[in-house]
Image 1 (cartoon, rainbow, N blue to C red):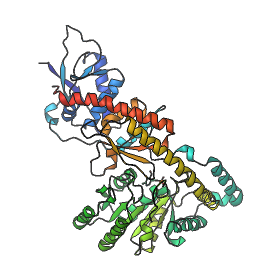
Image 2 (tube, rainbow, N blue to C red):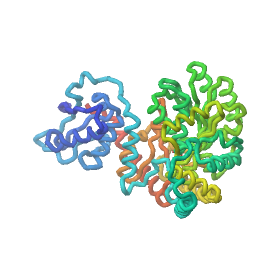
Image 3 (tube, protein in one colour):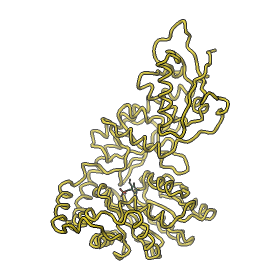
Image 4 (cartoon, rainbow, N blue to C red):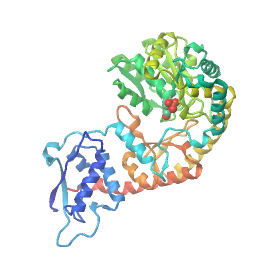
Length: 508
Ligand SMILES: Cc1ncc(COP(=O)(O)O)c(C=O)c1O
């Protein structure tokens, strides 16, 4: 039997430094000081996590990074060791752990989840390292942006409107832009008056304004499970409760929704009926109607997010919920960000009079108005017919990239991996085999191998999705899509070997 000794680690749970980075620092220091000699066997990730009362993901990530830096080595079937030759007069040891020197106190304590905001920040930071093929962000690809037309629109507006373009705008929005939005949405079947349109700083602000206007601290917001990460952020920032209702192949499950509504009386239901982020699901017409009936029966407003509605490269277009809404129960949020350019931050809300005035007041309190120059430039581009040109070209290219991603997923991802075949939007929603490592466990290795994705569990407001991965296939050109998925497949295989070892060997 090996000599157990204590791995003394004192973690600062309230500090800025992520837990896994603290762990890396401590282990590295102890290796460098000689207190962890080469050949020492480290505890299995599950045991160390339990003893330090931290999430297992933190330990797995720390081990992966230390391995990549050459401090640790993993041996099939035996576990994880301090790298280097063991001194024969100093037999290898196996170590336990204590947080703040008190293992007993933390033993068997429940896992502390990493805070999502920190995971997100860390994830984004890592995926932006130079040389990484990143599929992580939700952005349309930079090479889609119509640079020349945007430049020209700004110059024209400056010449045409002079200093007016640089002043405050009406909170409701630049009137000609509101009229242009009315014309645009009428082609989707949404019939409204410009007075019902509020121009916002992107769709993100539109969602946030609705949450602020309709909910108070502690109120309940229902979403799909999984849902858009930005909405989870909003709920946390506004201190409203959030609960996710499972999604099947037709969108949010109405049986579960109704049961939940009966018991909990939520104040708002947020859905993305077309190309749901992250699952890519499209809600068929019959479910759209049933959802509206349910909302009307219980008098719960629906917040519809239509930001991916027009990014369709296959299949039949369906009407947005707002186009089917006869009672004004739906508030529609969308924007020209995914279709044209995210950086101008032009989005909008469409709401009936019941909520409109309050939404305008909240918008005014937030930022007075969306920048006038950006609104005017967007209006000009819409007038010049750029939106349909962009959509036609972009959707053709999106389809091409989707096909490359599907072929690469089939070629490189491990057997037993599943994914959707999206008819639009930006994402492939992947499920790694359940009996292998989780998406978070593979993540750091994937980044070290030069590819990044969005960890699926971040999209689940009430937990789950540990083996899910979201790939923004649009973000990369075909050669990089292929290469990136190859790297992710390799990372999975590497972690999978070590994972099997860790699962098999009780290391203490
Ligand atoms: C579903 C969904 N809604 C809203 C947004 C925010 O978009 P915008 O850039 O228009 O604020 C995103 C961005 O990823 C999204 O995926």
